[in-house]
Length: 137
Length: 241
Image (cartoon, rainbow over all chains, first blue to last red; front, top):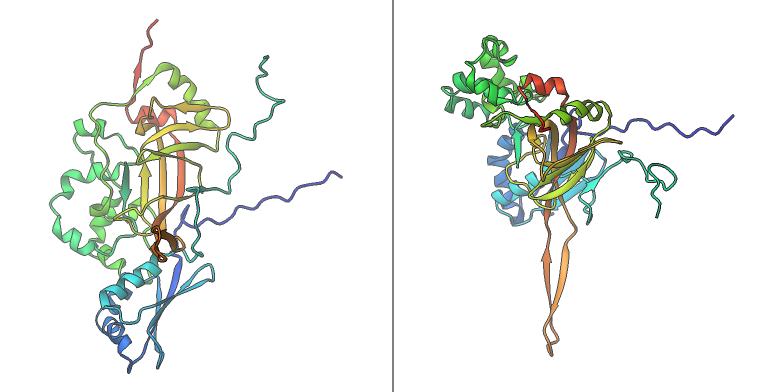
């Protein structure tokens, strides 16, 4: 029996058909006492409901974290987690940080030089010197 | 460079719809017909009786449509028909119909039939060789797009399959193909630190930068078939003998 290669199964690619936002959960941590949480507390009181209403696909948790700086933690579909410290930030800046986590893919930040990454096979095939039009020199 | 449809941006919807209800009667047909994209034929004709699949639905449940997007239990709009009329992308208007030579029309079925296809799409005059399902990280942050939005690339120089390639001179007409991409989100890079020094000074200045990039995924690369082109009113040019 000849050796058979492993058949490739179609990989799920988010966005080709349906699209699911990569950020699934945002945890907001604050401290009631500390001054570095002042902006965070204001954000939670005034802007968080609007933010949550705009993004129904993201689960939002708010919990105190006493005697620590305020933090936003984003949990992503790929299992990774990103935390942003928002100490001494204004509510608008915290909103920007929350947006940053919302739009993020959850992957580790990498420096890439090629814009296109593909898992498809080459459309035109691999060039072979033995096939196709042979050209005499 | 690209036409966009804000599928996922349904949040700002009630305000938008309230702002311009008067537009809908005249422009409905052109907005919805991006798939059958010839506005050239439809500009001359009066709007047909049933231009849209969205119209009867909107008439039956117009107030409910606005509410559904803020409701977390209903899913995000998946197809064009789920998007309200005011948020439909505006189809480009062409002044003259697509002209195709007889030889192209006779050989186009070979290209159309042979899947998969690749495309060299140009964005800000940079070429990107794309196939369906590819990831594209643009070398810049695209403004005014949100994750989930669908863009359509309309500038391409090459369109091909395994054995056939359609070359543009320098670009192909945008009515020959459809290339749609989905905005996935915004990516970042590790912090760059550039060390700057001056002569005879023991001080190193560290300049940092961190750029952000838009992530896209190619949803569709499609070469239109001859039948589709004919339905859209292609003009066949006679070749000189």
